Image (cartoon, rainbow, N blue to C red; front, side):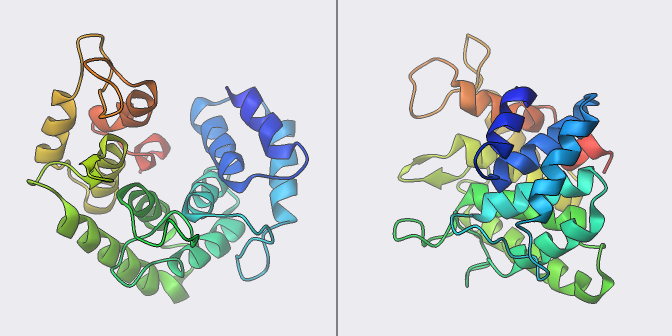
Length: 230
């Protein structure tokens, strides 16, 4: 819930990814929580440095991406521009993005790359001086996804179908290219189980709540940017 996200955002220390989700969700749901939102924004202003990096040590692509989305949604364009500019520096040599730089996440991943694409696409025109750099980063990230698309309709992670990544990639394709990838969309629809949920390799013949929640917009042919009218 929004209330729980807010509590986790501002309790003890700010958690950028959750803060970004809270700001974004508050905007798109029209929640009447202005004072709480300003508290979260104020806390974020204390950890976002002038160059857009975060003072916190444990941050990831998802933190920077969700923070970019949430700040933009709340019309905090200056801070969103700085954070999203830093996001471009997290791109890997193959054009994709990974979760973080820890020992076990050195490779690029579909979900991190898709989130980065959506964040950069939304914010690419905030600073004309680096708009070309962001577009180049978006193009390279899309090329990474294209190169790793299996059978033209889904993605794989850890030797299994990556349902969540497939859904996020579908949204990223839509956000950056302005058109629905019919092959990926059809594949995702085919993963709907008899209980109405989207299945994943981690469950058998039933819907997975996480995959379903994260894939719902993709099934609708929308992206996170669509919720902001983009």
